[in-house]
Amino acid sequence: MPELPEVETIRRTLLPRVVGCTITGVTVRQRRLRLPVHEAQLRRRAVGQMIWGLDRRGKYLLLRLSNAHTLVIHLGMTGQLVVEPAPLRYQPHDHLIFHLGPHVQLRFHDTRRFGLVLVVSDRFLDRHPCLRHLGPEPLSRQCTAAYLQRRSKGLKRPVKNFLIDGRMVAGVGNIYACEALFLGGVDPRRPVGQIGKEGWQRIVASLKQVLRKALVQGGTSFSDYVDGNGRPGYFQVSLRVYGRQGEPCHRCQEPVRRLLQAGRSTFFCPRCQCG
DNA sequence: CGGTGGACCTGCTGGC
DNA sequence: TGCCAGCAGGTCCACC
Picture 1 (cartoon, rainbow, N blue to C red):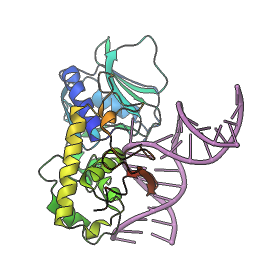
Picture 2 (picture 1 turned 120 degrees about the vertical axis):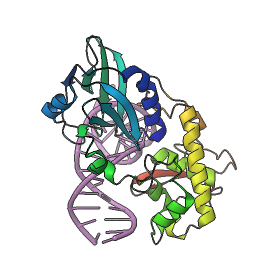
Picture 3 (picture 1 turned 90 degrees about the vertical axis):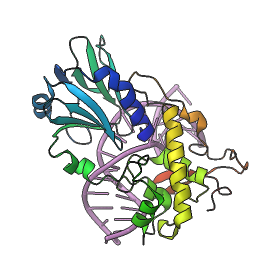
């Protein structure tokens, strides 16, 4: 579910509510996530530690602990991370609970269990397999047309697949790849190796624009996504192509089309996206 | 090597 | 009404 704008919104909403708090306990109700939760290790490394910072890298949230370890959390497709008072009873799929004192908790909820929770020593953090191969942040100055053109040299894969590959750029998923390519007027099937400098400039500019706008709207909510306070985002009303197959293009009225690329849906306007 | 397809999960929707 | 296929915002690995 959550791509960069959603994860960043979660980070911003959680930040004032968790930074300065101490993790007083951990309840593990389900250990089978993308990687099995190492319960003893999680307790040993996290309980008693103060959260002094909350960062994001791609779609990963990084809770900085006072013992020079980092709690790494990925939300997969359906993950939620919410700070709330202790509930009377847990909901199904409330898998992990970080207690922040007796009455408040940081709760990890994930229907499909594609998410991930682990604690890593800061000494090894940027060499950890999850983070090691991540490309630059799309909203950073490192993410330029020149960079993407260099990485795509000689490759034949479609530009849409390239954009959602975290090793190229971190944090871009299916929604924002489709939306950025629409905005840039670029055919999602276009082989990346043959895109020139101007093409990449259009793509980078559109990508940044789409991500920034989605951030302002607090992300895109279909069903699962909520921010750290449990509130949905509003970017779904701004989507131009994603999920709109058969409906008229907002720019030219041509029906939006859906196709499969590497097993995933791509939405695009065949008339506006011929670049 | 690069690129795709399937696996991992649960839940919802739409067609019959 | 019920059943079943298809689909969902992500990532990893086997295989061509």
